[in-house]
Length: 434
Image 1 (tube, rainbow, N blue to C red):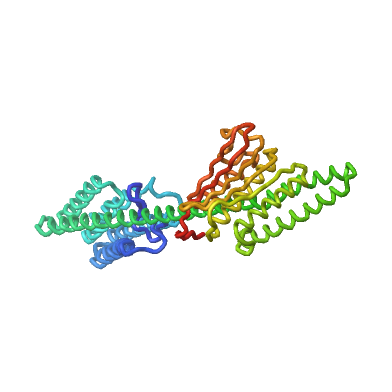
Image 2 (cartoon, rainbow, N blue to C red):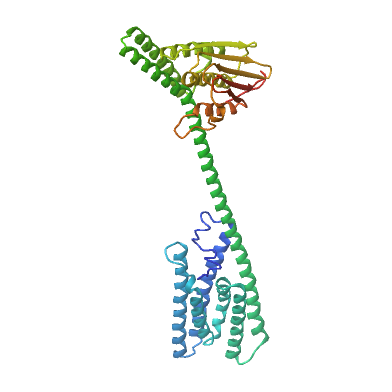
């Protein structure tokens, strides 16, 4: 059965649009389609047998056999072409579908007026017209086919009985109803499959977007951790190594040896942080002692490294309020903020003094990093990392604090030093999970 553009491949056995897994409606369509083809072949064979058994004469018998054979070959060629198109092995059958149908009808009309028993083929032909033509043209074609059956009966019998009119008309009406039901089933099947395809595409796009978002979040986390640990340690090593080289060039071997020792200590600390990072552990873990103790050691380490690099400044620590046990993520964020703040002081401030202040308030934990250095215009502070990769420290710190509902403020002016202020809401009763 050939189809047109309005109803491509209705209920095709190998319809790629409806695959995979036929639904109940698709199974019904398949059965109807196969039944139509089998019915056409059976009715054609019955008509030919009745012609031959009725003994109409050799000429009529041969003519009926030839026309029946041609009709069978033409019908089979159309169904084979449709199946090849449905499976993607042949181009569209739409351009010549109506010509094929016209050829089938012409051969049938010749057989119909050769012998009345071919009138039963009108029923499957009704379905072909309903599938291939548009609704209005199909109804007109069904009416004309019905009239042809009635006229053939009149021609062969020589009279027009009521049964010869009612039978074809009822058959045509039944075929139209069945065709409309078939079309509704087919449309519903196509719509359901389209909805399923859209759902699959949406789910695939959502999964891809979630994967991309997860990858981006993981990259951001890794970049933040690398900047706060390895990058800062390596930066300190570079500065101290330059100072050691300058001391060696000046013949000051004692200072060079001290600076090499500082390089070794910094590298060892960086290696420990790298191992913690690889193990997905916080470098400020519980084994390192209290937060205040770690910050004091950070102040001493920063002061020692800055002195070795020839950029010496004093670093002090003070605490306001009674210390309380903090969740690991808050402790880690404060530790990273102190690291980032002191790293910026060492790299840019040219300060003589810096102070880390840790405060325990009833509703928040604060950490401030003061310095008396050159200061800066806060309008020039990057919100996001620069294209050259710099400016990531403060942007990463804001992201880290944002995950905890915290805030970062920077107060500074040229020549007046800088204050980096961190505030994280915490009452001591909240549960902060990673």
